[in-house]
Image 1 (tube, rainbow, N blue to C red):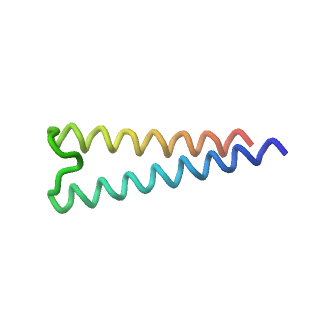
Image 2 (cartoon, rainbow, N blue to C red):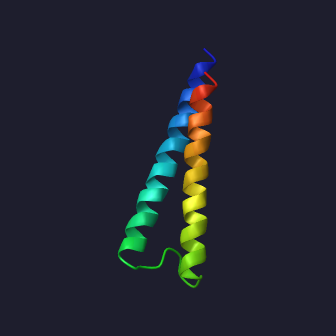
Image 3 (tube, helix red, strand yellow):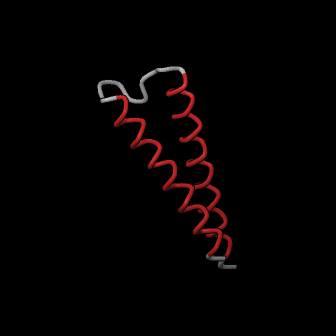
Length: 65
């Protein structure tokens, strides 16, 4: 019974992290800004760190089952 919330949270974190990394990669590949009005390198770095962090949290949730 306790693994249900871990599966849900892990799935949400993993999907969000993967989606954010894919979106950031597509924006960087097209040389489009990741965030308007912000330094392009800083915004791409911060978005990549947030996406990677979400993926790590998703994996951690899956290991807690």
